[in-house]
Image (cartoon, rainbow, N blue to C red):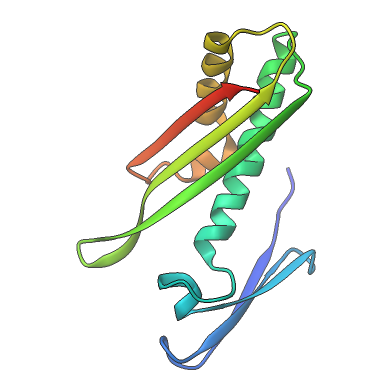
Length: 142
């Protein structure tokens, strides 16, 4: 299997410093700061990158599950919302909400939700995030 890379550089102290993150060989680069991570400042942050990775992985896992069951989707739109909270006075990813909408011909809502649950449990990123206390799922057909 493949090895994937990311990198970051931080310059300065925690509150006054700034950093850059790079995905792979530069397919995405972004700035981040204390403000973009813990307040509402401009830039990205590690939690947004985790959310994007989770949404992307989950959408692919659900597409695979549906296709293997002879219900290939027209489209899967997934979002992940990563909740950063203080736990034992430390910033912690305490919850992730997955929201998915699928366009899947010939499939009813209950069956779609069932496939989505299986995909959530089997998604590589979901499994990597197994230490997150709560990962919710809202699944619906378009």
